[in-house]
Amino acid sequence: MKTKRITFLAMFIAISMILSYLESLLPQIYIVPGIKLGLANIPVMFAIFKLKPSDALLISGIRIFLLSILFRSFLSFIFSITGGLISIAFMLFFKKINTFSIMGISVIGGVAHNLGQILIAVFIVNTPGLLFYLPILIIAGTLAGIAIGLICNLLVNRIQLPFPD
Amino acid sequence: MKLKRNDIILIISLFIIAAVSFFFIQSMKKVGGTVLVLKNNQEIYKLPLNGNIKKRIEFDNQYNQLVIQDNKAWIESANCSHQVCVKHPKIQYSGETIVCLPHHLVITITDGEATFDSFSY
Image (cartoon, rainbow over all chains, first blue to last red; front, side):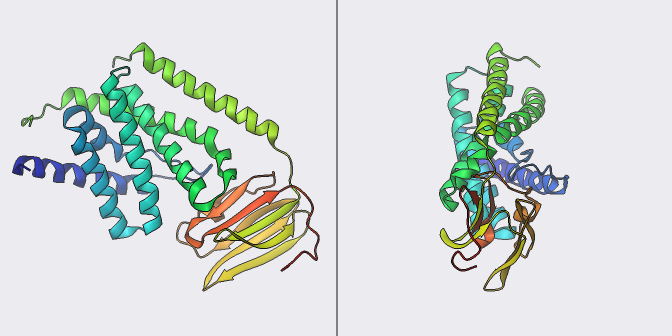
């Protein structure tokens, strides 16, 4: 791994950890568990569009790992990593088939994240009743995806990386 | 910003899917009769929803204070890390569930009547 890439990734991971912290300061909308804005997804999406797919996976995976060992529990690690990986997988796939713009891919990422988390929750506590949350989580994922999509669209169009590799 | 037509279609269809599943779930809802309490997927209490009950569910210094009143059930207080179960709205329909993940505790509403002498109450 080139030093340049290591430095870049470290910077992105640091930014996304800070964004996770900033998000925890925002007032929570509490309708069902799991609604959030997903600010930490901004660097990940930036990596999907400007860097490599493996960079996006590393940024998200290492951020979740670090936050979990620093502040959270093993259980929240399982939830975050499931949501994160499923959401990145969907975003990379739809970026590849080139059907949607940044906005569409962001929405797909938000909704996939929520679907992944509710499925792992149903699996862990063995309670199909949690699927009641599905409609609200789809709406929440879509709205959060639109918000993050707007931000990412600005960033991707304006930030020119000095080191494309 | 430039949106593709597909983006609009995607967002609209997600809203439609959410709305359809919402109304589908609403139409299935009916007020339940029994409150089941599960710990680690094992049923530990079975309480009537029409009762007037306060129950402290405690294991190894982990407690959740369950309240059943006016045909609704909720967690009044708990010493778990998230407090998600405490913030959860009151539940009354069959299948509705409050989960306290840190304590591996599930409160769920089912059909049918539970009598006061059902086991372990």
